[in-house]
Amino acid sequence: MKSTLDELQVFAAVVDSGSISAAAEHLQQTASGVSRALSRLEDKLEVTLLRRTTRRLELTEEGAAFLAQARRILASVEDAEEQMRVRRQKPAGRLRVNTASPFMLHVVVPLVAGFRQRYPEIELELHSDDQFIDLLEQRTDVAIRIGALSDSSLHARPLLHSPIRVLASPAYLARHGTPDRVEALAGHTRIGFTQPDSLNLWPLRHALGERWHCEPQLKASSGDTVRALALAGEGLVCLSDFMTAADRAAGTLVEVLAAQHVDVRQPIHAVYYRNTALASRITCFLDYLSEQLQPL
Image (cartoon, helix red, strand yellow):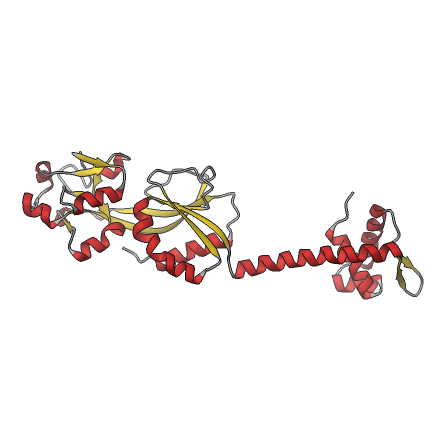
C-alpha cells in the first residue's frame, strides 16, 4: 500500500513541530489521529522514521532520508496547486470555439482583439461550421448555436436573441420594384437556405398566419452566401440582424415589407457538455461575450 499525501504532511509536521501534540494542533487534528497516521506510514514503509522517547522525537537515518523526499513531494504539490490558483486568476490554455461562419465573422471576430488583450494567456482556436457538430468528436470546448436546441446532453447559456427580417438591396428594388404586400413576393426572386427548412419561414404577417413559407428559387447552405447574393442584387432574403446590422446602417440592404414584419427572434446559445468541468477559460470567454453583446 502506497503512502498518502496526508501521511507525508503529518510526518513533516511532527518533525517541524517537535512533538505529536504540537503537530496535531498545527494540523487541527487530534493527537491520536496524528499518531495513527505516523504509525501507518511506518508500517507501509516497514521502517522506523522517528525514535520516540519520553522527552523528544528523534529522526532515524531512514527517517531523515525519507523526510527529504517527502518535503520535495509536498513542495511539488504545493507548486502545482499554486499554479492552478494563478490560472484561475489569469486563465490560460487552448480554447476551441465552434460556430456558424456568419456568427464567427460578424460577431466573434470583431471581439477577438479585446478578448486577447484582456486574457493574453488564452490561445483561441476558432472553427466555423454551418452544420451542428459533435463537440467531443471535434474536440470543441464551446460551440455557439443559432436556433432551437434539441441535444439534452448539452448545457446551454443564452447569449442573444436576434431578430430576423426580409431584406433586399436598393439596386434590386430599383430594377424589380418594391413589394407592398406578401402576395407580391411571388413575382420576385427569393433567396433561401438549402437546410434546415425552418430558415425559409419568413416573419411576415399574411392571410394564413404570421410565418410565410418561402419557396426559394435560389438556395445556399451558408448565411454569408445568402447575404452576398442579396448585396449583389440577386433577390430578396431573410436574415438575422446580427449579420446585417452594418449593411442596414450603410443602406446597402433595406428592409422590405416592414409593415407586415412580425417580431421573430433567433435564440443564440453557447453550449458545452454537462459533464465537463467548466474551465476558467470557458467561463471567461462566455462572460466576455455576454458583456460585449448588445441586445438587438
